[in-house]
Figure 1 (cartoon, helix red, strand yellow):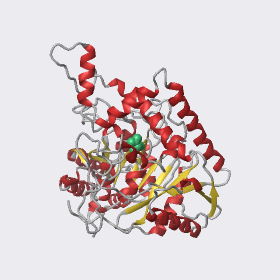
Figure 2: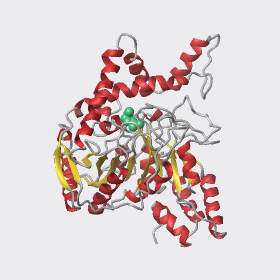
Figure 3: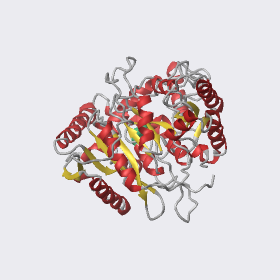
Figure 4: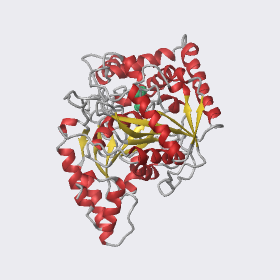
Length: 493
Ligand code: GLN
């Protein structure tokens, strides 16, 4: 029998409901897997007792014949950007180290209400800024994957790198992620798992540490498209506490999954054929096109002419919003306070922020403050907002010709830890394929497509119309069925 920590969300839920095993046994297996994987550094904090308590509630409900929640018995990892009542929520920063929220984020609360249990708080790039999980105050996460014939530690992607590593290493069946410019999709692609960023507003942002509020979206990460759909149903929904939350019913995505794409049109954005993209990525894109054709879809060539301006616009808008959001960390109300001898208020702010923020966070605050400054606001921020509108309009025009778009998730497979750390621009280039959908607020998913010649996973990205997560999931499932991705990282940790 497959070890219980290797099972997916659906298999655990159904197995617990059928009495094939208990939720307690699943929680024990996952807790043990987490405890034995310290070398990955995927968790900032393990919470085995939370997982056990939820499991015991599930088992007791089943024994008493009470109705089981859609995630009863399913232990998950929680990205440490979601506020969890009574459990440290650090955003992988020093400035929030030791911050224990007295409240629970809406999304995590919904997951607990559905019966899920928490295995722990997952590592991430500090304040979700990064593409490799190396900006965490708690150290980098190592991907469980390695290149064939090499022991070099690889990046699990970022910012949801703890989530991707933990799922790929079978420490948990699923986890939460957040995606501002690609942080669900890129780590999913790097580690051979699935992840979906829903339409902006589907999941409440309430209680999620803010990075760039007009872009931040929560979403699920798991090893199958169906598991993502099940999780997203639990996470999504209107929340009056988030003014950008969509007041729409949550569709039954998992029950409506249908990989038959007859009558659907799949757009191939010609501008995504960019210089610097790996040959293996281009080849997997061709495979993806053939698979979707095989699933019955008609393939159409589409143009998104402003694609090349999306990345520079994102790296103005996201830091601008971050510089504003992060102004609240001043040593007065949250976490760290540095109070040098004889310091006044201004010195206290400066000392706290100097000690509490990492290099990348400081870089973003400086860029953001600069582009919002009186003399440069129009030249940078206003201009970037205009570009954002043009990028969104490109997509709107494309929807006249197609139902979903197919593109690579990333320009390369996972790179080595340390490789891009000294070159922020090279790091930012990782987001070139993920950022446009973020700027336009569109649902987008990464699905494993195969392995490159070094034996590393590659992801394909499906982008959909606003609110049409269903078509994204359906196309994702059509890819999943044909890619037949069963590769697992070989255990070294
Ligand atoms: N890598 C991107 C950045 O550093 C995206 C991060 C994210 O989506 N949270 O901003």
